[in-house]
Image (cartoon, rainbow, N blue to C red; front, side, top):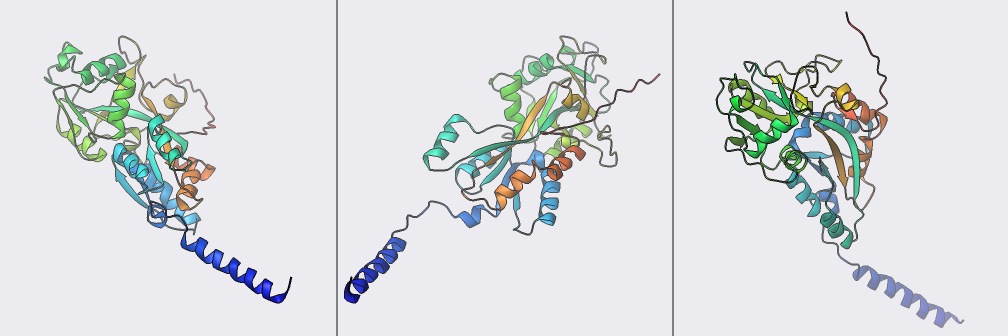
Length: 314
């Protein structure tokens, strides 16, 4: 090969590289913008805020901004590439998975914790045990009066309140309690966030609230056996008749041994095309330090390795 041929070939290669750069396929998303945030159902605010604080203290790779919204909006943001990470209590549907894969993404579903769905009532309500069956009857609209469940009750109509009309709490109740049928109580309503459910139930004698149990733990109690004293957390039974002996509150141990019937899984839905900060945070929640945060919050870590001691008190 002579020098002239070398120069011509070299020039051709250089031009080819420039043309290749100029013809680089454009993506339909802004990676950097989506990588700066994660979306989550608002009911997970207490645990995720603490997870994020510890994650950012240990890692200098970047900062994530949380967007606390309802579950369906969080998933919508994930599907629209407005975020690469969403925390929910449901997995991506087959249709959503196919949509993402068709766009050359590799979505991942990462379970991080188990949460107890708590049923709360006003402290003046003398009835503190309920069956899953009666809870379903309330949601379906089959019963609307407290006396329909507790014949001696004088509280009148059952006032049902959720944290948000499109929250993970509502979705879980529809799917897991009503078998996919819509909630149909005539006295049902939703506020805007979980803390408002507690406030509403505290002020209304006939109210019943449905809320994630992580909102109810008394942070002063490191044993996780004390709930918010402004409301009463009901005991829930799988039996046809609820008694104090066959009903359970969403304490950590009763999530662990399966006694508490209203248990849901918290997932990190990850769709990041690179291994950046969102991926790092999602996997941190599964690592020992992240799981310890979940344990201290009173929820059940997905990789629970609990030492349980039975104590007989006389």
